[in-house]
Length: 190
Ligand SMILES: [Fe+2]
Ligand SMILES: [Fe+2]
Image 1 (cartoon, protein in one colour):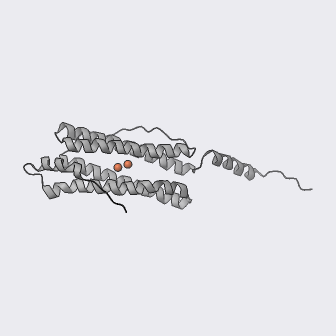
Image 2 (tube, protein in one colour; image 1 turned 45 degrees about the vertical axis):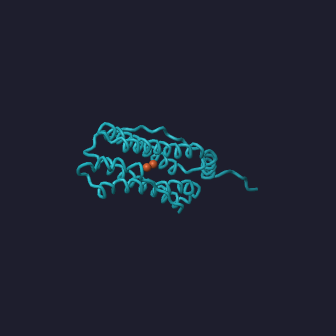
Image 3 (tube, protein in one colour; image 1 turned 180 degrees about the vertical axis):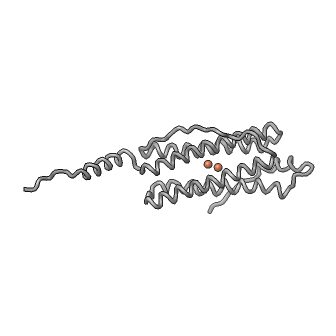
């Protein structure tokens, strides 16, 4: 009579199943989500540096704008962090370094902000692409909030930068730009 002895590869499959019980997300998805946690923490720290620069150069409204952005980025970080934790993964508290503290000009701070947002949009798209290839539809659905958020983040960053073209920096231009920054909002029902 044939005995039901497990084959070596069967044991391995069982182990993988056990790991699967512990975590709802694949190891490489968990890894890229942790990289994104670090990126959001980095973004938060960069916005804080931008706020500090604006504060000490007399652009109070822009400083407030960047402080608020910094808080938003921390909220983004926490969303990813909680998701990884909720899925049974290991959310890694990120280290943040190499934050630029000096910027060449007022305009340069808004260019830095837009650059940051474009890079973030690309990073989130790359995670979605990976999820798609792995058929991780749960994480893809989780990312939907971020796709919409990035649409807003990029919109606001672009409109702020456009103020430099529309108003111009001559005379009281920079003062006027700083006055207009808080009025830049994005509201779309779409
Ligand atoms: Fe973000
Ligand atoms: Fe952002």
